[in-house]
Image (tube, rainbow, N blue to C red; front, side, top):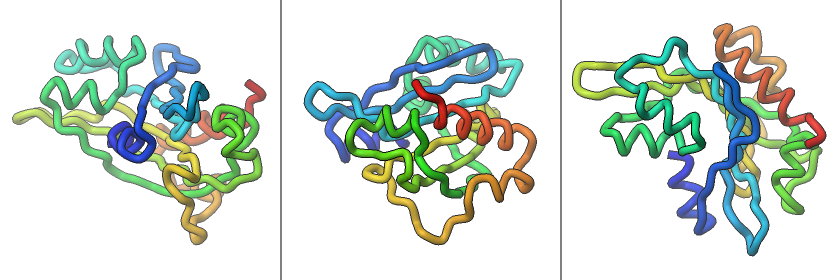
Amino acid sequence: MNSDKIRERFGHYGVELLEQNTTTRLASLYSLSGDQRITRTLALTRFELPTHSAVAEQDAQIRSGDSIGATLRQAGWTVVKNNTIDCQVTAGRRFALLGGATLSPEDSVLLRVYTLSVVKQDLALDYAIIAEAYHCEHIATPGDLPPAKSIIASLTSSQALALTDLLAAMQKSG
C-alpha cells in the first residue's frame, strides 16, 4: 500500500484531510522532514455509494481521517487496486505548496486512477474510485505517459470525475 511505501522510504507517514463531503475526500498522505509536512501523495477519493454495510464501520473510521488501505486491512479485508490507469500532469500550485520546497508547480508528476476493491471470504466490493498524484521523490514519472487530459474520454464516468476533481484541486491556491 501507498502508506507503507511512504513510511519505508521517508521514515514517517501521516494523513491530513484537506476537504471532504459525502461523496469525496481529498487527503494529503505526507511524511515529515524536520517539522515540515511534505505531501508525497495527493489523493482524491470518490466513495461508492451507498456504503455497503459490511464496510460501514471502517468507512466511518476512514471518513474521520484514518488511512483507507490500513483501516480496511486491519479489519481483515484484502485490498485490491483494479482498472489502474497512469498519466502525467504538472504538479500545480496547491500540490507544489503541499510539497514544500521540494516540488514546483511546473514539475511533472505521475497521476494514477484506479478502483479500490475489498475482498473478505465470499464478499467482493468496489469501495471507491481513487485518483492520486505522486510527489516525484516518492514515485518518479516515466517520460512516456500520456497527459492527463488526453485520457479522460477513455475513463468510466466515476474515474473521469475523480481525475477532473483531483486536477482542479491541484491547481487551487491553498
